[in-house]
Image (cartoon, rainbow, N blue to C red):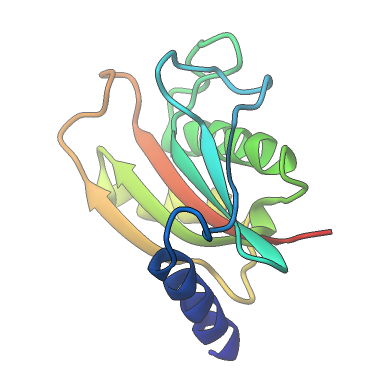
Length: 155
């Protein structure tokens, strides 16, 4: 609880400063993740001793833009591989994730999603999450999209 409070205070402090005094912001894309023109894969906000990383929604496409998997489990593995590849650009892993936003076309498959998710996140302190069932994602064959926020200690 103390870590969350400190993080909340840090974020609040960041956004209460003017643009001139606000810590640096950096946008990055991983070459190992399919890049969509006009969209950044991630942005980091320097919070002093750590940085907060916000990721765009990740879908089950490989770095060539091909769909990976036809089941929620297979697609979730690819989504988290993409998330991990982006977080590696900042020196982090899925264990640094503090928040997930999950969009799925079949909420009944949530246990299958969680089984895979738990291979990538800190299960001792799981990320806060929102799970939303949607009628469709950007393609009919995509079953899941996941947004992530991570906090990584600066080195």
